[in-house]
Image 1 (cartoon, helix red, strand yellow):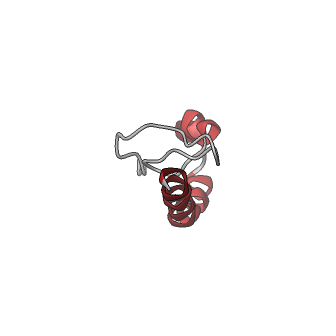
Image 2 (image 1 turned 90 degrees about the vertical axis):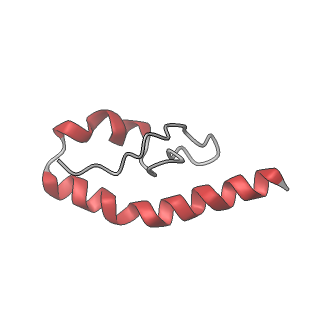
Length: 62
């Protein structure tokens, strides 16, 4: 099963996304029970989420 997990598990409190993979806690918890189509849909959202998470992290450092 394909997974975006890179073993960097930390939730960004500003947006609720994992800083490693971009998923929400609910998506991480339910990943195994989701259909392949549902997982694919989430996977398409992850690059944008990770960009937002990176931007949020940079804002907090400034």
